[in-house]
Image 1 (tube, rainbow, N blue to C red):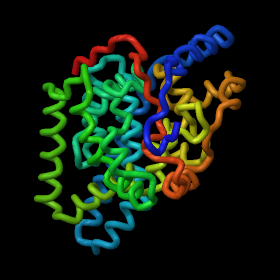
Image 2 (cartoon, helix red, strand yellow; image 1 turned 120 degrees about the horizontal axis):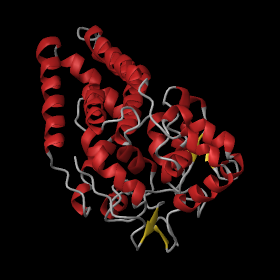
Image 3 (cartoon, helix red, strand yellow; image 1 turned 90 degrees about the vertical axis):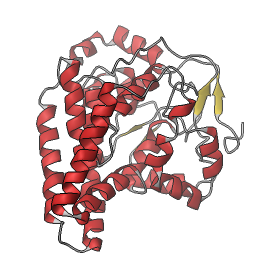
Image 4 (cartoon, helix red, strand yellow; image 1 turned 135 degrees about the vertical axis):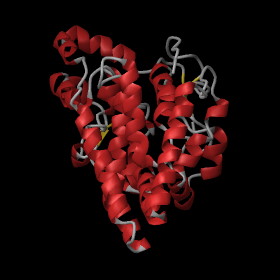
Length: 323
């Protein structure tokens, strides 16, 4: 199938459930890695404190310095906070869901745009229904893929405005209600925080947080992470890990096959999964450079937003997201 015109179609179930069963049968000791890491919250405190401190320090600086610091430092901090929100989404920090929800909203403060709770609502569906078009918000919409095309400029603009495109996907989704008390609490807290930053410290402080957000998930080597996870570079494999040095700054988020196979294992133990079950992961295609992947995505006309697997049938069990 020409992936420039349509998604890859698969009649097979998602690949992770079966591999998980096989790995646990051969390596039952991996079960010992399942659990939570409450110490992760200290990293959240440090990253939120860093971003707020930098916003304050840049309040009276030139706009170009604000952009530069946002690109080379703020983007990494905000991206790391997205990983922290991801840990909260899987309840991998605290035992009680309530505290994980609060931690997700707190992690969201420097992002300047409320996303912590809404991410939880669609990401858990992504795990259970990977590749199911009307349930998996990680898949781009068909109109989105057609609009972007396979040119470098189109894909660059898509990455630049990635948060906007992602926010336009929910209307096509079934079984996901994005409005809830927690969602609106998240919105109220983040926009109130933005208002305080702007009122007390001025536009530059808020611009720093906004551009840190844009660069952390957009036209930046870190933006290649969204390509790395499920965009096909070696069909029919549909999930890819990244084993490069930026995992040190991104809390091992590159271990994506490992995470999908074992979503109940926290970030600090993901490398142990690969080490124990190396025969399963080293045989898969993986990435070692987000920067290289970014340029490959931009300039390879054979890679587009249609380079994703879509399943016609439901891939998992019904998942109720109750927040």
